[in-house]
Length: 220
Ligand code: AP5
Ligand code: MG
Image (cartoon, rainbow, N blue to C red):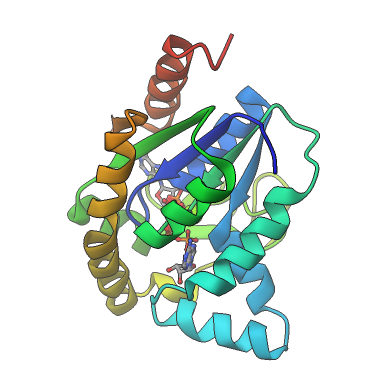
């Protein structure tokens, strides 16, 4: 198993985990592993597993632990040509946190919780659009594309995730509020949890995270 420094990004749906992971992976040269992206890619395959995953995601439900752990561990065991790993969207249950702990320990691991309230979350998610080609994230109010419906970076088509509809967002938030407290307590008890206000600008959040990591000497 890897011994690379690992940064775990926790936070509710729409708190900015993906946005921050993309920035931090460039700045720190860390490999970005998003379980949501891995699952969405798997769910596009017309296989039994792909269809099963799609049903969970589209209803805002968590994919069963054994499915996600297999998919993630395959990715985590790959050899990365990077200085570390960012986990975005994992763990989502205490069981997942314990599995990761048993497999990798917590040495070299820092956990960042992006703290954002439900009202802001809902506004962020409803207006989110993603590029189907390069995955770049937009917000139609705060960070709109220059040309409507097109990615500024690669010209790809922008789409809205099926789980970004308001009824599904409510469900995702309910699950988050049920599952996250024991995970937060788990990492708090190991003394590796840092809470960052996620209602600041994207650049202010990135700067806060980097400043915290610098304090821990994980960033030069
Ligand atoms: P996943 O893809 O991980 O979704 P999520 O956790 O619900 O989080 P999001 O991707 O919706 O939000 P984000 O925090 O990345 O925010 P973003 O940066 O996009 O998971 C999807 C599904 O897969 C789950 O529901 C589940 O079914 C399954 N799944 C995934 N992992 C699993 C696991 N471990 N176990 C079981 N099932 C799993 O930002 C949101 C918007 O806000 C964007 O428009 C962005 O531009 C904007 N924004 C970001 N930061 C700011 C800011 N500071 N100010 C203003 N706007 C901002
Ligand atoms: Mg995301």
